[in-house]
Image (tube, rainbow over all chains, first blue to last red; front, side, top):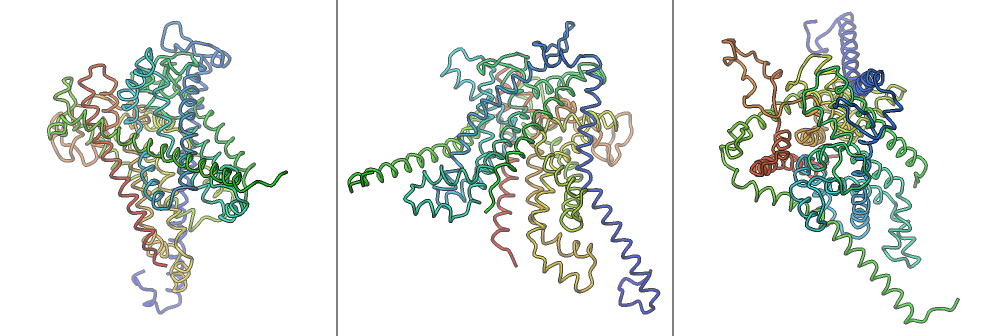
Amino acid sequence: MPANNPGDLHQVSDRLAYNAMRHWKERLIEAVLLAAAAVSVLTTLGIVYVLVSESISFFANVSIVDFLTDTQWTPLFDDAHFGIMVLVSGTLVSSFVALAVAIPMGTIIAIYLSEFADSRVREVAKPILELLGGIPTIVFGYFALLVVTPILQFVLPGLPGFSLLSAGLVMGIMIVPYIASLSEDAMRAVPMSMREGSYAMGATKLYTAVHVVVPAAISGLAASYILGISRAVGETMILAVAAGMQPNLTWNPMEPAATITSYIVQVALGDLPHGSIGYQTIFAAGLTLLLITLLFNILGQWLRARFRENY
Amino acid sequence: MQPLTTDEIRIVIAKGKFRDNLFKAVGIFCLAFALLVIVALIADMVIKGAERFTLDFFLNFASRRAAQAGILSAWVGSLLVMLVTALAAVPLGVAAGLYLEEYAKRNWLTNLIEINITNLAAVPSIVYGLLALGIFVYQFGFGQSILSAGLTLALLILPIIIVSTREAIRAIPAMIREGSMAVGATRWQTCRYHIIPYAMPGILTGVIIGLARAIGETAPIITIGALTFIAFLPPLPFTAAEGGATAGLFDWVMSPFTVMPIQIFNWTSRPDPAFEVNAAAAGFVLMAMVLSMNAVAIYLRYKMRKRIKW
């Protein structure tokens, strides 16, 4: 087709050929774009395939009952034990500490920004909070180990150099911006008329915030908490740096312990041969981690559907 | 119930006002505390790391002696990994966003892709590292290279780029498309000459935020087995390589590497306190990179909001 401009094509057959080419080109482009969109589905399939296939080889050697009930995690020792609860306890304790900081603080900041602060404060505070959320987690890990732990040791003598408490507290600060930002969006979506109704009955700002706005925005708040939990459970570097990496079945945040994520980092730092049982453990641990996050996300979606209010 | 006297009503109002103000104080305190943490974080790293902010620190390789150790291989590694990440994630993310907004029909496939993107954003980053270890490192045989790391981070930030592309495209009014189609443009021509240019600032914001996230990621890169001690740079194209050969244009993508966060992790976890100084200085450099990228993105978004043309 020599002509670049369809206006130059005077014969009907040329025009039809041009249109056919154009149509074919459009279809091709659409297929390419669809392929790009399908990469995300392939990613998910890849994750499931890798984790499940390596875990199947792992569970060929280790019984699933031992995996869930054993109280020791010593996969690289001669006397190998594979009790995932040891790692799960570290993950749950550190996440609990983090959420005990992040949920109250995040919610209070969100209520303050949405109901009390004037718009200029909000315009400045929100971007700064977003910056806090963008700080690399390794920097938070450094901060937890070398700044927060010494301060905590001053307050709580006897706290070891590595602890779930210190890592969890810093993790909480890291999660605050996510919860604050999402909760604030949810509360701002509550229509003004509901607040005005409450004020007209003589309610104070705080009473309106707690009894009208928060209940109306509860599905959004729940979603932000679930995101916070996913972040805490999946967080790696803060724990790898500041919580120590020795497996320890404990519910006491004052102790050092490994989590699922910091165990994976520890193994990856060493040089384990591909296909060995030690190599397979990190995939079994990863699968456990993915299932825990998945569980919370399903719970979150259910909560959102259950309590969603439409205005 | 007895009606309240004026004085009693005054007390009720005063109590309510007091509680409002108390909560306001708590709110300001929480906000200030969060800001204080950022300030403390930066101040600590600047003060501790101050003695290392010399040119040598940027031009030296890692070393066993803390005072001579530098971040040359780390920042070069981070830059090259980001290059691979951007080259993979930007075209894929923009194409996927464009497809979902402009082409996709409402059917099960589109729904599947959308649900999938939402869920991928909640997957912990270390799981991407395991994916890359299984697929890129062993299945595809890319090894522990810049290519493996760049592709891993590209998959990690793909949801961020897709979502911001979609938001930018959605903000373009339908009349732009109708106008273009009315003069005979095809769907692709409409996208190419109208949708993509108008959505560009929004896409750019998402790309910068995604890359800022990627440059600070440590866990997935450690998981694929990046080395922590690298005292050489990836081969520059067309320079002499080992064994008298000449390095090809793309040899660097298969090179072993280290990145800034891994260097910081390595220095932080050493018992010798002399390395803390290095960790602080390197941490500050990384923070400066990430925060300035984020600041550019926030500024772009702010500017965009101000000059909406339609």
